[in-house]
Length: 400
Ligand code: ADP
Image 1 (spheres, rainbow, N blue to C red):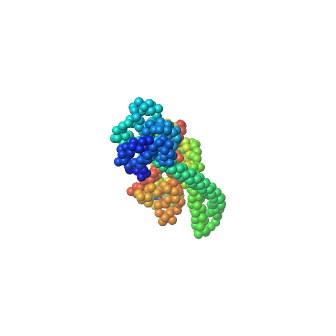
Image 2: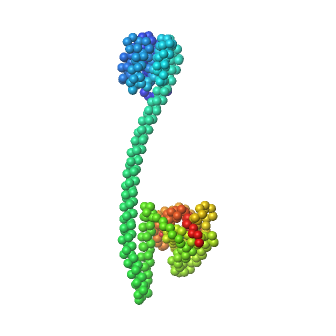
Image 3: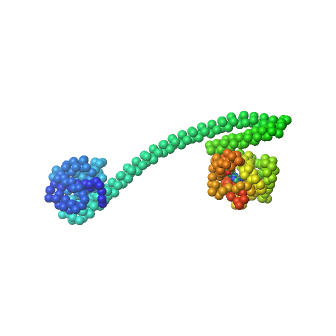
């Protein structure tokens, strides 16, 4: 097995001729053979270097092989090194082997068969190399774990920082919106009063423009406020009974003047099985409808707006129903490649349109969040003529 570091093997025998014999058997292999003629010398080598396996003669004068092995197994640094005892007879070996049943210990009887010794050493070296690889992988893993822990800590800090910044932005926008809305209400109120006074045609037009601009500014500010509330998860839905037909009526009334000015017609188709009285956040549902119907009217110069409402049949719960609501127009339509951008905040399909039609590009993003909070979803479809927005919501059913 190719390795960069030498594989050290310790050969311990008091007789130099035996050491030479061992050396001859192992010389073909890519091992670094270190020889010791006594137990003490073997221990000195073991203090200095790392060994893959030890070949240890049992019978030696002074500190014999068994004594030496005891020392080796007692030291933490060397206790895992496998030992192959070379013993003079079978009986001695069996006795020895029983004492070292923990593994990593083997024996051979003199005279040993060279290829058996070679293969025993090869298998111990294989284990040694596998353990080394495992150790370096463990170290690598440990380093990676430390690195990941550091990155996690940094991410947690960055998240905290981002949350603080988001909170500051939300608070800033909430305060600013409030501060802007108060004087703006004054502008709207005074413009209304002004419109009730005697004015020339020119003055009346100016007053109307003031009123319209103030309305659109108010809409943008309300949208920004809603959007920041949604982003920070502060928007909560309420639940109360409401009449769906009355809600649609109310929404359409807001646009009656605009529609008749542009000669747009509107059809409403509410399927018979749609419950008349529902339970949910009517104000937020109205906001979605106002946005979709408002857009349909805004982007349609002639033709009609069509609203369809039906119950989605496969809804399982008896106490709620899933409604599918569609708002279709015959207006300028939406290019297919722009569909994905529609529901992104502050997205308007092109800036020239923005100048012509106004708006903040937040309405659809807010509508999507509301609809999702009502366990539904929203999608847009490009038609041959115009566009269709379709959304679903889950609302409570009220027994009548
Ligand atoms: P805005 O306040 O700008 O209308 P919205 O989020 O409601 O913001 O809409 C984003 C953009 O989607 C609009 O600027 C417009 O380009 C496009 N759009 C939305 N509704 C329609 C529609 N019915 N027909 C064509 N384009 C539409």
